[in-house]
Length: 306
Image 1: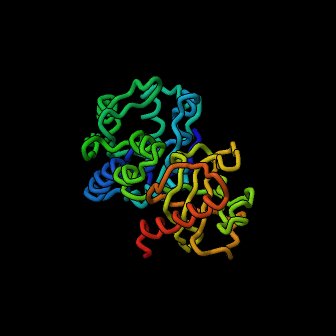
Image 2 (image 1 turned 180 degrees about the vertical axis):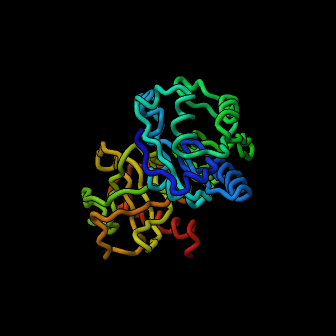
Image 3 (image 1 turned 90 degrees about the vertical axis):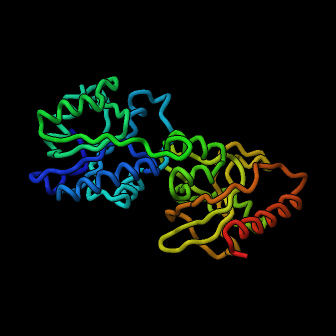
């Protein structure tokens, strides 16, 4: 069984929170908070148990959802939400074939020495999603762990990764923020683009991302570019650049008032705050540059920099 590492307090046991935890949204955070309280009551560490890649990417690759966070980001967010450790089960075709009992025996009981398991309502696991919360409860009686089922946290409707993805693909960053509890971020490496922005007086950082992240709808956004411990206000363009007959979808970020930053080959995070407008085609470069100036003004207003 492939996994990242075992928990140092195995003999003592642990409280486990189980889920894919894509994006670690407010629903996931509520689940972790419940686990944290229980772990503190029992004097045990809280371990977040997650899967990588997303199970759908293995079971039904054609229907695999776009990711809301990389594995590294997910780990950071899970620790931030109260986990003492993160156990990553590498999800393979073999693992997808495990019956519920095998997952419980190998991972929860043998490897992690579960004393309590916290899951969301309607949690399913095992081959063909045959395992339920009731399956866990029955196994818990045999293996010596209790099971706590947590009602999905919600506002008008439940917080979910599906809801976040829909909001992002529609460019509704306010809705994504409501569910995530923070602004949506996209990380990657800055690579060379066409250098047209620099020629127009707006040099941009062209982002190369890894994997299959959710990309906001085409358009222009106000946000931030973060590199190392520096955070810069930025106008962000998402799309194929139809002004120049582009076909490749890109995320290009202009750091306000800066043409002296050398960001090539650096890892950066682009933070999306609000959508300013959709993608447009202009009659000429002069109209395009005028609009870019307007976008910069609008970005300052959104970021409260005026």
